[in-house]
Image (cartoon, rainbow, N blue to C red; front, top):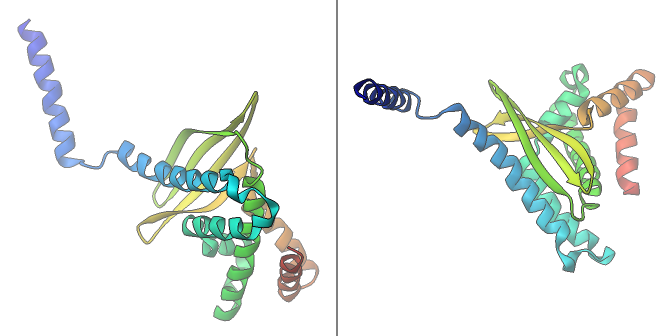
Length: 204
């Protein structure tokens, strides 16, 4: 009995030392990152689920609300930089600003189109990995018997975790755009890429 009590005492002593020297445990940090993603997705689902916004005539109003939520959590700077890779360094400050604006609007529309089709889907948060200032939040979109894995890549910017890529069924959004942009630039020019983005946004 004395051995048992001594064991319990030792366990509590070790826990006290851990909490004293490591107040922010990995699980607490993990929760912060995943909760940030969850808060954003919950807000988006609330908007697309609102009956007063489902009518197609309310699309513009719905998109404004979605844009406000999405832009707070997505880093269009990181998405633009990673999509252009080496071509990003060659751009002037004005060109970078223009590209971020164009690409950001394109991403907003693309993501909004996907999320607006949500009806009774359920998002399950299954895992989180963190290494330095980057993290990965793994989720599954579940509807009836179908499960679609959607993973979010995040980077820490100004004490906040921002999404810079999402991977749907193993396909990276950033890698997909990177391949398209690279092909257009190599075949023609960066200016042609910008013109194509502008034309695409005009159609939208």
